[in-house]
Image (cartoon, rainbow, N blue to C red; front, side, top):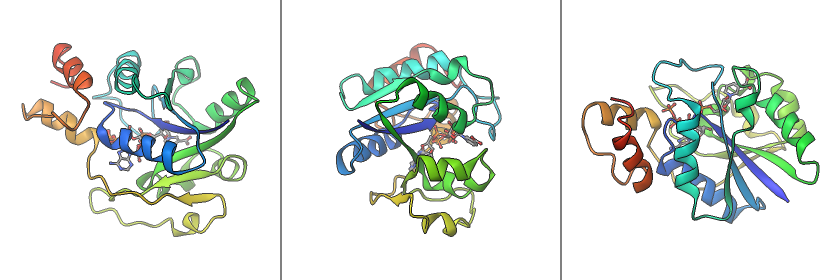
Length: 195
Ligand SMILES: Nc1ncnc2c1ncn2[C@@H]1O[C@H](COP(=O)(O)OP(=O)(O)OP(=O)(O)O)[C@@H](O)[C@H]1O
Ligand SMILES: O=C(O)c1ccc[n+]([C@@H]2O[C@H](COP(=O)([O-])O)[C@@H](O)[C@H]2O)c1
């Protein structure tokens, strides 16, 4: 099976992630999309990061009714921060019957040259890139990656939503309904996350 791996902090998972994953699983050759919940992104601060088990729990609840979407905790038992190439190698070793590709939002493509062993990720796995508006006025620089034969730009609507926006909304007591699935909203409110 060809599987798209969608790596992220998912702090929390939101409708942007779900639309991307579902689009990838239905409009490309990817048969399934696996959400790989990262305990710690090497480039991000951990201040408002929920415990990895809570983030995984929200992902699992959000995708429970979609047979093409799965979640994995494989990075929980690996060294931190989470370097994607190490996880890709581990998954390929564990599931030799599957072919893995990497899914990412376009914003991550612009930093991709700073990732550990990015050339090997490109050559051995390949990227499926979903368009994303750049944040904080940052200008796109990575046009060289867009031309790479193993980079596939998947056409889909731009979704201007982020986990940061959702965390800020919770803190400011603004509604997050429709930005996250109901089960995720319920969990955030019940467990008093992001306050
Ligand atoms: N609205 C979106 N459009 C396109 N890609 C997205 C969108 N939201 C998230 N992604 C992509 O999903 C992956 C995981 O993202 P992540 O969990 O960091 O969410 P986020 O909304 O970017 O979070 P944060 O605001 O905390 O940085 C990344 O590859 C990111 O580029
Ligand atoms: O491997 C790397 O060098 C690397 C550098 C930056 C980010 N990543 C991964 O990219 C994924 C997206 O991160 P995030 O926090 O934006 O959701 C997450 O799984 C990170 O561990 C990986």
